[in-house]
Length: 383
Image 1: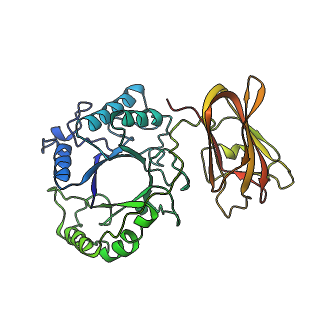
Image 2 (image 1 turned 30 degrees about the horizontal axis):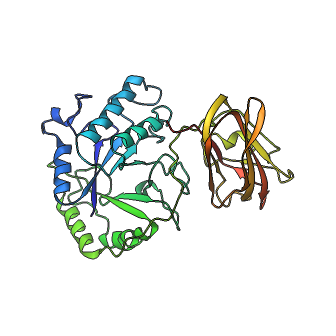
Image 3 (image 1 turned 30 degrees about the vertical axis):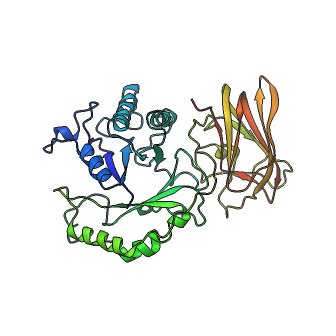
């Protein structure tokens, strides 16, 4: 192992460190000591890096959808500041609860860009990882420095993955300790080694193996034996260099759910499906249109410096976009942002010096069939 990751605060809001933001923390438990301090010291003493898993959703503080207030967001910022100033170098913060079906907290509800900037200002080398692979395409880093796959929730890494990635799975039947675990089923160590540890490194993916400590804070004997077996079976073979990839997309998408128009679409696959914040739906041009176009009206004149175009999944019947013309409207005058080959892959990213405009339009000049757009994003400059 090369690092450890601990859930410093899960969805219930209980904090495992000596926080000054809430009394709902480990210092007021029967244990009465800063568990996080003991964790970082213990892991670093063995040469292991440390990561923190941190929930944005907080049911104790009532930081939930439609209940979010500025003071609750400020609490999150203070908690992150405590974690990144009081416990030494942190390799990564893993956010949980954003965009999750059970939490439904959006990147606007609790401003992701501000939290991302806060983390980087306190520890520039700390990776910000969000567990959002169930929503966002695997071909780009939307709101995360590393693509994260929760295998137990059915998230699977694409074959041929070229992005920095991380996956996770518990060795027991679930993430949290249960009374039957000391004699319950343990996942086969041989399968872990042959199907994950031997394959993931060459796919640029690190792996988090969860073990739930029991009520005494120890690892049950059956889980401990399984870990020892994995340690004997697996030997790290080599290190793989990451291929070049686009920088993470961390800014606010100002085109999301804004009014839009397009050339003639195919039946019910209308223009509104191209910026509805759902990558499974899409606008599909009628095959009869020679140069199909789609445009979005922003909320007045806005600054932006990036556009992303995500095509429908392969097999959905849309042709691949080969070339396009992207323009923006500034005080009634249309100006070109990009004109040429659209590039490979499902997600196409266009970055440029910041401009100001109230509309963005993409005209598709070349495709190998009727083209479609799953999501068109327009992003304000990084603050």
